[in-house]
Amino acid sequence: MKRKIMVTGGAGFIGSNFIHYIIQNTDYEVVNVDALTYAGNLENLKNLTDEKKHRFIRCDICDKNSLKEIFDGNEFSGVINFAAESHVDRSILDPSVFIDTNVKGTLNLLQLTMERCAGRFLQISTDEVYGELKTEEEKSFTEDSLIKPNSPYAASKASADMLVLAFNRTFKQDVVITRCSNNYGPYQFPEKLIPLIIYKAMRMEKLPIYGDGKNVRDWIHVNDHARGVLLAFEKGKSGEVYNIGSRNEKTNIELVRLILKILGREESLIEFVKDRPGHDRRYSIDPSKAERELGFKVLNDFDSSLRDTVNWYQSNKEWVDHCITGEYREYFKKNYSPKEAI
Ligand code: NAD
Ligand code: DAU
Image 1 (cartoon, rainbow, N blue to C red):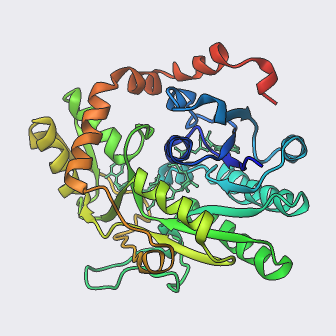
Image 2 (cartoon, protein in one colour; image 1 turned 90 degrees about the horizontal axis):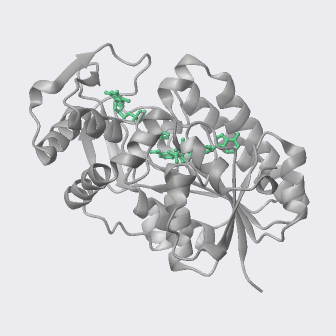
């Protein structure tokens, strides 16, 4: 029997890269369930190596009745939940949709996966649930670190994690959680630091750096994350959490200078602006457990992958422009019949 999985949020940055990865490297069929919020872009899924293994269904994970129809119409051997509101700054402006999608949406998926015996439920979580490290001396987050989220986004993701673990303990549901650090790579919406800086620097616009620019993020290429997720889905122990990261910490200012160097732009474009409220100082992920238990290994070298990423945004100006102008929304209307939109 063919293995079919539900991937939610597959039109977003990481979900779409994950779908490219598994369509190319496995025999899974994918049903991609995505609401196409501002962050969902079907242009990310053009040129799949085998279109027949991918089916897109537009559906909000908060809409349980529509989700039920999808579960009833398919025999899934697992569900991987990437769907989320993912931008910290937006969660500061309006937290409510973060609770709807990230908490209530996850609850709907958990319940239906269990009721319909749809196999393993993998929750894509984040290192932000651990809160912040204050200094360079503090040890990296392990899976046993305290859960101490600071932004409304992080709090919503932590709440979802608690629900997922509670379903394992209470109902013996087969669940796994992955917690990854900051991703970079193609198809990232240009509201996030790396694509935003590339976009603005290419246009010689000022580059807004929050606070003193010394906040630290731990960067991993999205393809390494995708491999980690697949390993956790196939080999992870039920009820366990796996950190995914690549031991690659950079201050924001260091990272922005690297991008400027690749682009051949002046550092005078940098502009220090008002800090993000509650801005976490440092993230650092210890992926030892995933390495030991899943055989996880990072394959993408940071310097060359960052260069490739910058090149990708330079060569895909149309994709970036469509994000900025909102034109990517037209793609759905042109390419998908109403049948596929539940
Ligand atoms: P993204 O914002 O690029 O994509 C999110 C996707 O989810 C979009 O396609 C959007 O349309 C969809 N979506 C949003 N609300 C939905 C809803 N109610 N129903 C169905 N679909 C909905 O996010 P991303 O950066 O690709 O992140 C994916 C996941 O990975 C998230 O769960 C995020 O918390 C987690 N994560 C992200 C990073 C990172 O660096 N970006 C790092 C660690 C973990
Ligand atoms: O750590 C994993 C998380 O990484 C994910 O869970 C989130 O979904 C993802 O958005 C990301 O969160 P961050 O807040 O770390 O990412 P962002 O790209 O928004 O910001 C990265 C750093 O850059 C952060 O310290 C804030 C800073 N920044 C960001 C923007 C957008 C700036 O200085 N200027 C900016 O304009």
